Length: 565
Image (cartoon, rainbow, N blue to C red; front, side, top):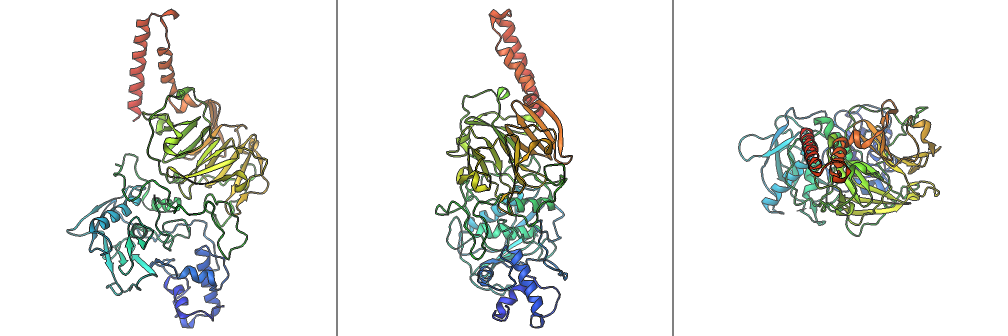
């Protein structure tokens, strides 16, 4: 097993803190080494064999961050799979406004590019938190950024090109928070060549803010370099971790200008295959997408409800990215008369779909000016008259469902597509009525007719025993619904122009059926305005009275809108 491996390969386990206890490497027992290899394989998402096999060796010899995968002393324990993927270092900044200083620059890129990249790398964290960052060239700073080669004064030498790309220190005094980059790497910008500095810097600065390595291979904070990604964004796992440390960004936090080196385009190369390929050496894995990321454990069954765990207070919102390039508002149906075909919670907003158009609803039911917009103005060549829509928490991508097909969009561009059977749904399911990611367990649920399905991302198929009837499992919710979305601990189910409010903690409807337009969209005033605008002189009210009524309702509506802002 271990005997055929080099000392360098085994020292990897020691360097990244997979061993339990301080015993020197040459005194480790074979059982200790096997346990360490198993923990490493489990953490990195590899088949757990306890051997340094070919797949494991290929992984550990790849470029990565120099920070250990486990922080602090290890306890003697058997292999335990973590349900929560992100990890915290136990250290954080006590203030929200931080200063950073770039001490020197790599010769690989212009200084202006390096400055902009570091600013953008910090901004991806600032966008999700109350944190703000200011670059300074004078006085003290919280985070020092340094490019260096080999030995550079901190006792953690770099190793030349490849291997360790960079390392950083968790928040604290002195060297705490500093980030060091191996200048033997060839750092690039907006290119698949070399090592993309933005990706590496955003990862290292995550450590500077207090995040440890994540075992979610899709997370930025996973230990291995993931390559250049156009349209790079934090994963759901990254957002959950940083918001556990610092909380969410306040709603009134100013938005920075668009980052020129993170365009809203798909992050994969054009030649990437349309379906995730099975990883070599890992037989039996399904070839359909895993939405959201696989969890190592099955949520516990709770009889008498939709087999969902109770709501976890403080569960953060799904990490957002609002699509750009809004189109001109088309002529379309009135919002308050619409019967929505699909809905989703996205970027802290609720998106409502009908026909070829959609509305974006802010808090308190406010619809900003310019809506409805064409679906295709934000999601290029997207289907219209969709049946359902969800935001995928693992990738922040949007998935539309129409008929027996689904379409996954990354930013504004189609990333991949497939049929419902590829997600493990039975062949007799020809369309969905609604879909949602249930906030309490972050799993996809599909509604069709009077039944619903729960998709198990770990097994890559619908769970055994499904479909189940919506009633009585979703207490108080009818069948044949139109749309659904989760928001702030509740699930909203739309049927026709009515809605039901489902408490995720009580696992039952607490309101409904109620008028969705009147309660959620503030349509009472708007409907009064529309009635006034439709008054005719021949209806028994002269045109001057009608015009005056219209003006009064307009003023009331405008005042109500301003009060809600």
